[in-house]
Image 1 (tube, helix red, strand yellow):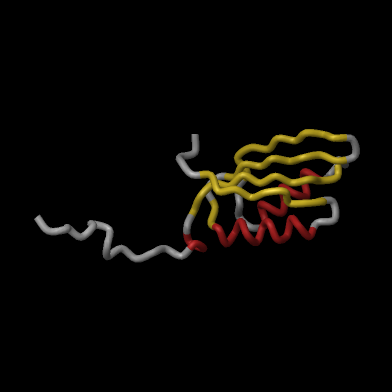
Image 2 (spheres, rainbow, N blue to C red):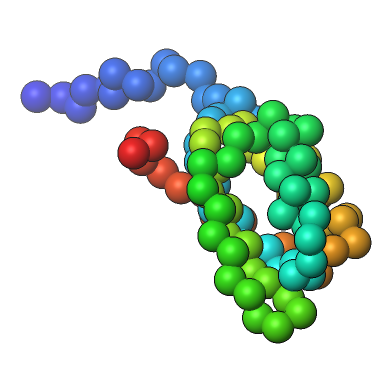
Length: 103
């Protein structure tokens, strides 16, 4: 028995810009009216749909934890870049890819 070539050997490698997956994003933001709406609009501008949002207040600041529906890496990267530039977003704490089915 010789070694057998994988069934996947001739498949092209997809560009990361084309791969769709969900993301979990943590933001530190100012806890003021309109901030959540502005953050949500930034996601919408880049065609990234929000699945869930959790907001925890900490005095004058808040933490937003946002889970997206499947989106391309390219669209998510543009979203994060614009979020980091918003005056009321103090910091983009983390951006994590979430593997597995949406459930």
